Length: 229
Ligand SMILES: NC(=O)c1ccc[n+]([C@@H]2O[C@H](COP(=O)([O-])OP(=O)(O)OC[C@H]3O[C@@H](n4cnc5c(N)ncnc54)[C@H](OP(=O)(O)O)[C@@H]3O)[C@@H](O)[C@H]2O)c1
Image (tube, rainbow, N blue to C red):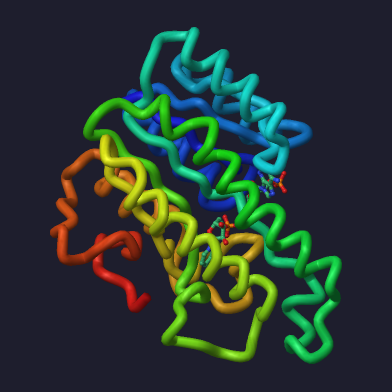
């Protein structure tokens, strides 16, 4: 497969891109700012691991990367947007004391960033391919808690964005995937699984080894089970 992953400097994006490269797939590994040491190491180790500088909030960078990748060999089998943020203030404060600039930052990366990725990359996906946004159980509209308000609002909007894409892009399958509570920089305080487990599940969904019944809809977890919208 030929797959683009956005947000690979650490966490799920890093583990998923390594797993795909280890299995011989061609990976466009998109990092922001500077590539992490691990990204540089994978680029040395795997011939088909290609580094792409891409901050998901930059439409200019997304347009340039999209043009370069399409010139580089045509269509993609899948795009996975793992890039996301949870701000420190959002861990600490309830919505009644929210730091509004941090709410804006969460919306900018988690929602606008995904919209930019959709705009510039869904056309590169081949017929029957897949577009995944990694969202969260926190984005559910029925299962609502008071913690992480800005993040939850942004993940609900990212879910809606993905659902709209699912209605729009008829040539590919579209999923918002909850990756589980992972032991990463973002999730270590509430972790239940390692990011490797989530990455393996997402690989099975990408490869088609895990079939998603149509009745599961567009919001699923990393095992392919339906999530509560
Ligand atoms: N961890 C959990 O328990 C959990 C639970 C549910 C959902 N999720 C979702 O799963 C995804 C991955 O989370 P994670 O736990 O792996 O988080 P993480 O360890 O904090 O990693 C986040 C990644 O996103 C990148 N990123 C942030 N802003 C970006 C931008 N503007 N452009 C490009 N890349 C950007 C980061 O790059 P830098 O390293 O350069 O900052 C990093 O590589 C997120 O969307 C998160 O919301 C996580």
